[in-house]
Image 1 (cartoon, rainbow, N blue to C red):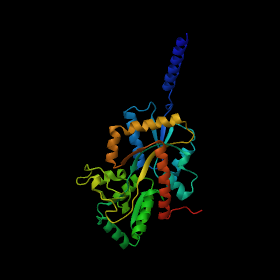
Image 2: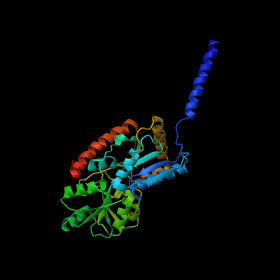
Image 3: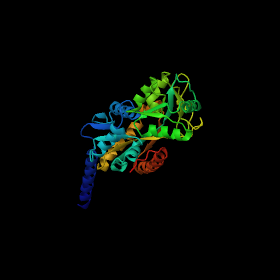
Image 4: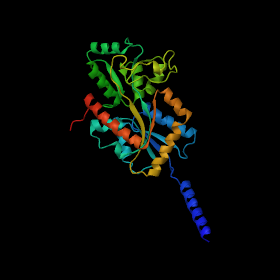
Length: 331
């Protein structure tokens, strides 16, 4: 009798566990990926590439919708996600704007208001000029900037964000003066450089790869501690690895930017785990590996405590960078 009772109890436990497993949380309606910048930029391209990977490999039963909320230098997208407390059908694809936008504007927002999912890469920044411009090295570009008496125009995404921060750091290091021209996204900044409406920009590799391959843009240097790892030729003569670091060219300015997915705050651990697992499946696909190489992204994947620790360190580092660039908002 006792053995039968034990067997029945064990069977009930196993059945309950199987039932719980079968009822693991998954989205019940379409999932929105919020891009807090304009169409064509690196964040937008990443979101749409991931949307395609999910669909191709049938990684979700529900469709994914990419929404661009580019207002106020990214603040609209950040605040939209913060206001969606408890909504498990929304993801934010974010960059270091998580810290820089609140720091320069006193926006009532912190990344701690959200739920971290996964950092899936780090992005580089390249100093791009028009291929028809006379300067072919960083030194020549800086000399031309000095000679122009502050008339050189440098474009970038939004105001007082990564692109303008890098521009400000370059000016501080070299004693030059630029006119910074903000655009809604890196795609627009690339188009304006091709049309010679600006003299340079500091786009991510993915935002100017088409123009580089077409011979419209020249990559002067990458703002990174070491050269990009990818050796496959992108243009007829150059790979990403052939682009020197800015420090090699005598310009000691370095900046890299995380690419991270966040959920609204107030979601359950089960809902968070669903998207962590989803991101792990995405980065294991051959399409993602091809995307990393094509766009010269640094392969780095973090979740859990390792991710929250990274976010805290990166936020502190950006506080120093913002201060050095002179963009701390006045109180």
